[in-house]
Image (cartoon, rainbow, N blue to C red; front, side, top):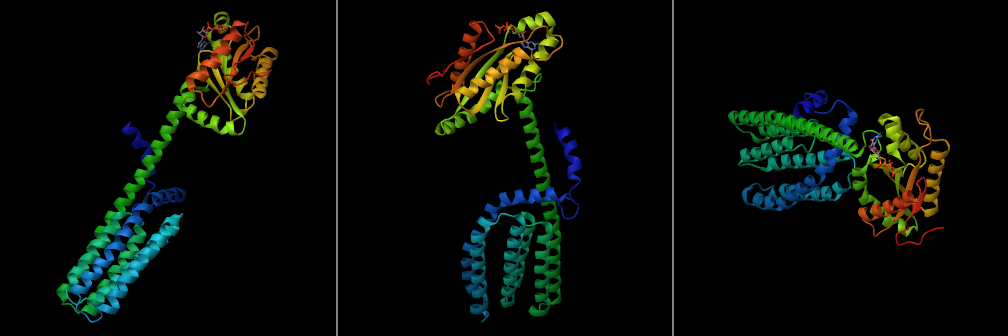
Length: 396
Ligand SMILES: Nc1nc2c(ncn2[C@@H]2O[C@H](COP(=O)(O)OP(=O)(O)OP(=O)(O)O)[C@@H](O)[C@H]2O)c(=O)[nH]1
């Protein structure tokens, strides 16, 4: 299975660009980014809340270690703007629905952050290396987090590094050796960051492809498991799995004074068809019967093959008269025009047991009631229907 998955996914994976790790197909990229937004919104919210809480702690530490007289004007202002930016961000992010707005919001908030960090760094006299170390940690985290695309992370971090290097060289007046170390530090951390970001984005896209592939396969398998291979009709398993929806629908329909009806149908003397005309003709009868029923129910109604020549027909949102009329129409068509199978010398008929689905029903209780009605129809001579009202009064 592993080999098959790789074969199917490989061509898709090749559609991820080598450098920025984005899908070449814009629609796929769009779907991927939208899914990322759904998943990341909460994480970004928590991160920002964390930063908003951590900022006052930094204010305190700034106060203790910054000796510059500019402390009160620059740093306090800087931290307050950062806290305000976080609060604005926290208020806006839950309302963001499109990933393009999310990118713009995260990018501009981080841009403000980085710019404020640079303003802050100007006021530092001592421990500038410590400040640069924080910068590098923040940048690597940003690259590796996947919060932004590779391109946007790169734009932000290169902007931040360039300004920081300019400050180091022209404002700080550090010795040449320290300047080289700083330039190398920012340069290498960007290089490592880009590699991490590319790998992270590629992984995320591969995972996205794999998830979609698995979802599609699961759906296909479910479709297969729900269909009868001969007639392609829904099977008993599908009915069992749909029954929860059927129960919910029964409650909703009761409020609208409507009902769902379950009709057990069993082709008459089907064994004789097989015996007289062969199994192949029997198969054709089953396929033609399903086609005839499907042509005479609405798209929201369903016919299920429970096995052999036994079927269940589910009618939605109708009353007893309508359910009976539908059965009468099918009986009329079977008797009058037949199933149009050349080899058959006489029409194939069918018996039916009709019952409403009550809100108190379980899957067993409603099937038993429909089967009891069908049994009565068979016992009374076949090619007819019987109605079992459950606890409701029997219609005329
Ligand atoms: N051709 C074909 N026959 C099937 C299939 N599944 C079940 N059968 C046959 O359906 C027949 C069912 O026969 P019975 O249960 O005796 O019912 P019947 O002859 O229709 O008699 P009544 O239902 O009492 O009218 C059996 O002969 C099974 O072999 C199938 O997929 N294809």
